[in-house]
Length: 317
Figure (cartoon, rainbow, N blue to C red):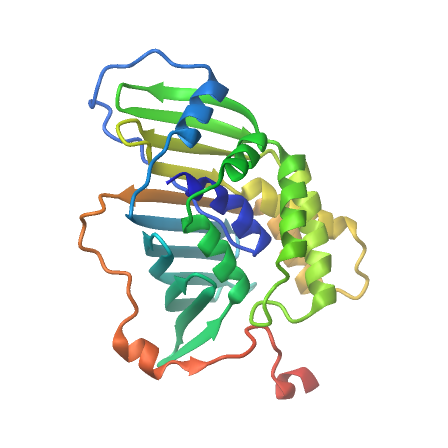
């Protein structure tokens, strides 16, 4: 589904994006002559393909000296909806060498402009709605227009065909960082964050300023493998480390005399010692894996109005 090509840039605008790399079967066919890179990319993204149902597995891996986080989920994309079922696994180490582990299972359901995210803390399931992320997801699963396809192509600076067979094509795609930043800035103005994800407008604007600088200074690329028999995505891989590092460096360049030493140290770690990659694998649509929310979850989940609101008692300390 070509629309998935747009997910990376729009997930960044909402603070989230997808991709992965599995090389496929090397013995599937003999090596075929490679096309010109941009011509190969244009053919792959413009050739019509209309699956009614796509299943994919996603891995997001973040690492720093004091924090390791892994998000894994199964996704089921239909014509007008998207369902996710996954787990967030975090392992943190403090200055004394003590470790703390956090394990959060979650589900997500999206239909048109409606999205609900369910997550479990301790023994309690909670939920919150996010119309802005729902709009992003609805755009991802929808059939792209000709204008949207051309916009995606315009963000590409260079393409190298890494592997070409009669049935598969793997491409290394370099993005134009400045054009991508301009697109994200435009999209961010059209879709301000939901109350459940950022209620502090000044804080959000400051972060988006750092992110804008980070994207413009980063060298961005991804690897895309496509099935040439039906022009469906097989795997995608994004290296988001440059964005994280350059965004943190932008924050460090902006003087913050009121920052506590611990926060400064954390941002410095992100700027110079962090690693963040995503891997996406699309599966055979006939697999029986389930991504739907169990009845006991959606019936008993406690609503949460604001995911970032500081409790009054904590704010007074």
